Image 1 (tube, helix red, strand yellow):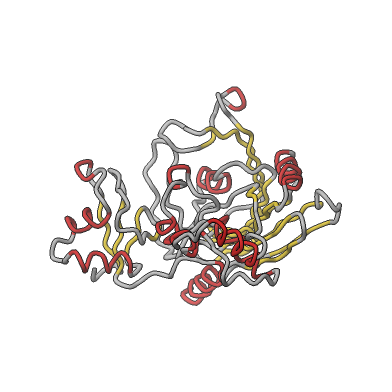
Image 2 (cartoon, one colour):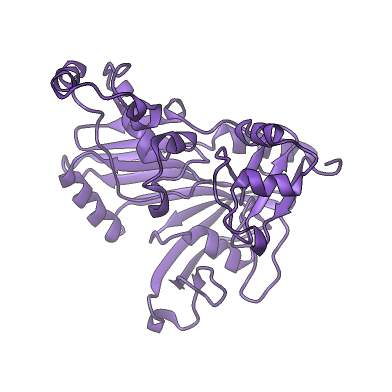
Length: 354
């Protein structure tokens, strides 16, 4: 690892279904099983760009296992969540990078211990919200803190203990998502009434959302208006030349404004008029201005992937602005969030090298 601080290994079809530890042992046979386990649990290993602490994870053909020379940052927990607004109907939180909003369907039946290794935002937020509200939750069971592994007391005692602990952790309901490596402002509903009202606001594009992004190249102020489909022809989401006549096509509109150019990169603001899956990342890539840190949308259909030499610590995309009329109270809510430290520190280092 002299040239780079990591080494990549590509999982072959013959390794499909093996555990991460078994696959990694085949790639680095000079290390013992105990050393392999310490690499994984010590935060030295990523799978497809995401930190993995689960040695029993099953790998798939084509997975990329990256082993670093140094340990990576710990997974986020509720201490990393910053609650910006809360009332009886909704809560707005700043999501840290590296956390998925919701657990994927195939992960929902994982045992509690496995979920603890990489909790999702909707699992972390109830505990963070309870602390923010001043609840005493030290003795309250939480699925992300091992409570489900405790021995269950007899039914009578269990009822008394639950009564003594007071109400359960608050319930939150996700109404939109951010990608795992995207940080920034998100709103969750706290009641069914707010959930349905917020979903209607999103569907009618009445939620103001702006993002800060760092891209390759310089771009001018413009609006991108295309129709996105799930498969553009190579398995990736993308714009279709067939427009609205394409099966499953959804209109996607992104407004782009340049803020600062530095060397080969630019800091821009992207305002969403619609909110389709991966919309900003797809539009920037198709325009020829790939997002720094992009791992998926790196090339046009049939083209060669573009190399990312930026050295950015993760996907350079941050949800910086969120605004809407409160669906229950009618109050105007408008919040802003600056670039988080990991991206701002990287930007400052890039500026110093110019």
